[in-house]
Amino acid sequence: MLELSDLELVVFDKDGTLSIPKGGARFVQNPKDQVLLKGVSERLAELTASGLKLAIASNQGGVSAGFKRLEDAILEMDYAMHLAGINHGVFCPEMNGGKAFAIEPRSEANGQNTSMPFELLSGGHCTWLSHQISLDDSGEGVWRKPCSGMIDYLCRFYKVDPGKCLFVGDMGSDQKAAENAGAKFAWADDYFGTAL
Ligand SMILES: [Mg+2]
Image (cartoon, rainbow, N blue to C red; front, side, top):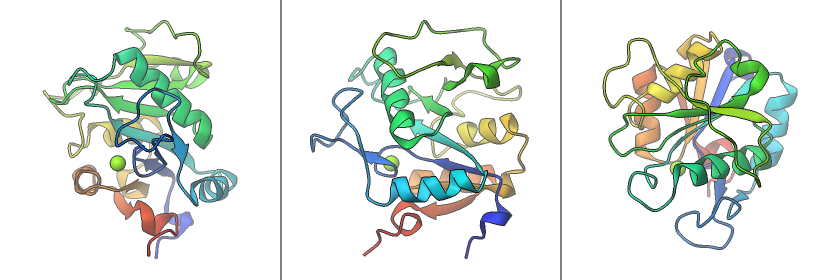
């Protein structure tokens, strides 16, 4: 059993873990087409009260596949962060995993790599900064799960040992990403108490 005291950081996959499309489509159709899954709000409130750092790490390959623009992915992350009350999100918009972006509070982003700031779009909840992120030792294609780049980045950002990081997801690629990062893993339906 995972004890909260063993953890410092909990990172969540987004789609199918925290939220699903509100309108019932398979994929999110626009940034606000998202609703939190059952049990998520309650669990996140407990975690927030316990003082753990929380973040979202999402594959957004639909950008490079041409289904959405990068700006849409930023707004989609922003809206999910707003729903979940989580103020740090990282996403990889490329199927080859070559780039990732972070959406984080301006105060926390200070001093980080802000070399590619985005002009945030009207309609978002962002009071935070979105920018491309890097890992000093990153090679090509490290970002998209099952690679561990997004989890590595968040552990380094918060100076948390990966062994004190839990990743919660709903796909084999999530489980593998946690394993590759040296982080703990939990299945979303177990974690939110919705497993049958
Ligand atoms: Mg998922």
